[in-house]
Image (cartoon, rainbow, N blue to C red; front, side, top):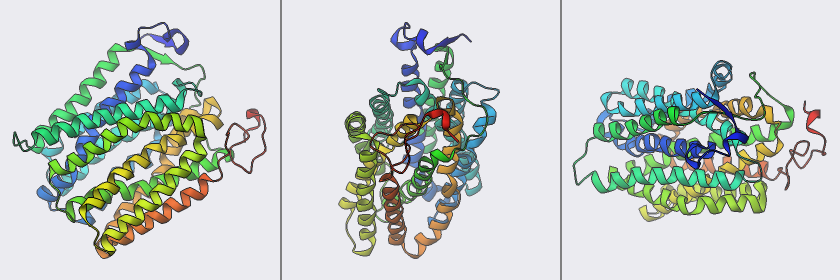
Length: 410
């Protein structure tokens, strides 16, 4: 396949440029993953009789490939990142398509593991490609639009579920086949429609751990630990405590992504204007309040309307997480982006490997305690965000660092 530089690609028609590929991949992934997520809790409860314990173990298995994302460094030594991203999307879509064929505890764990390999390897490489292909001055706004495109694809998935699930009496198998198949088709199209884009800075093909990136690593670790509580238990709560059906869960997620479509580009502009430090501080303060309110639902019996509103706010605050990407882009040696994306993704999933299973048992004892722990994690993230400089750059990675040249990296 033909290889072209990013500079040469500027002369291409818009439909063959790198940013268009990023948009298409951003749309393909949610078609499979968002549909899988929307149906998951109802599917495992109805077909396999899952409780909080089983759902915790399921998400622990799902996060193992994220923990092993560092293996991307070995793969990109023999395969281009762009090709790996598209192969990973194909794996995600294919595994999602056959999910309903395995309605047992062991079967669900197996197909989830395969789809998770595709999802996590795609996310690792996609983050690297975004930071390599997008100029620093335009990255926050471009990432905001990419989030909006992904939200639009999720909106399409959930909108179709809400509109057709009851009307056409759809089965889990039908929906999984259509959504996973659509992801595969888009990935295959991208393989043939786009050339291989060559970034100006060759990427290191070995593991990179630098002391000056420590704050970025810490933020990634806390983000992964905190996110697991939301991903695993927020939606599970809506089904288990309030008895939400598939179309109701889908409607809630539809509202989420409709809001994100409108606000994500604005968030990109806000990050560009106010900086990563202020954006992340705003996110973490908001998440502390949201998680404390989640706990109140169990401690004080607050109702379903508040739970639904918190779920929407939760998604909105998490959308600001791309500020971490642009923070790293500003402090990184350009050659470090790909290997550090893999290392950061592994760090992000350290807690994810054991936390869901542990929290599954805590959920049985005190569901409110799970969300109290999440609030404490958000508070820790807030403390870390306060260490980000207003204008981060190489040599100025934290408020404690003195400016120096990038070549002095440890």
